[in-house]
Length: 114
Length: 112
Image (cartoon, rainbow over all chains, first blue to last red; front, side, top):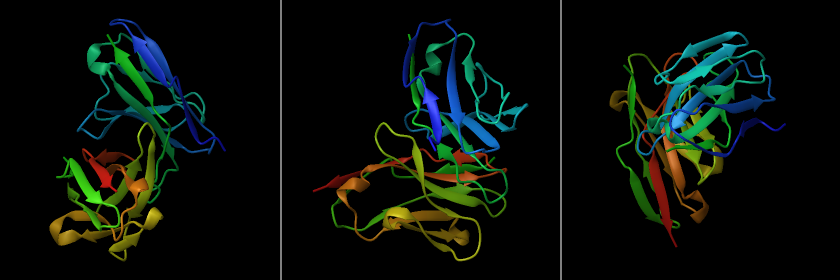
């Protein structure tokens, strides 16, 4: 199993550009999520999905869109990048259920917006 | 709203010394609690988790954590630190089914 994969590993954008961060998992997990990591703030939840066709907002959703057309893939879209979106982005997946909270994380995408 | 506090941003210990990383949470019900570790340039890996039952839980790499309801704490411990333990450690609470709230992290440095 490849686990959770993310592409690209690094990206530099100019303000106003758009891009999609890719995330895929091969563990047949129902739950997938996107976090951003900023120094001293831990990880903050952007969006999550409990299954194909179902998405919801997390703590910091503004400026980001997601969709979940398949169980395996959960892309994160930045429609108009801003310097405040400079961060490291992590995708994670897990089984659903009250005791399933073990999430498997991808290696991250480091995004810089200039 | 739930929150997780890790009071120590940086900790330095000597190799072979014991380690305790602090975590306090604010949450109305009995939470599900986790410790994750992040090595430089890597994603997060689960060290251990607490759902219910025995309040002392064992994890991977020789780590353990103790849930103390009266103190709203879930501190991580290791009796003898190895140089390879240098990393950033995150405490997290599962507040609504798979939705993790993370603390700010503690960066551990290990002196030879």
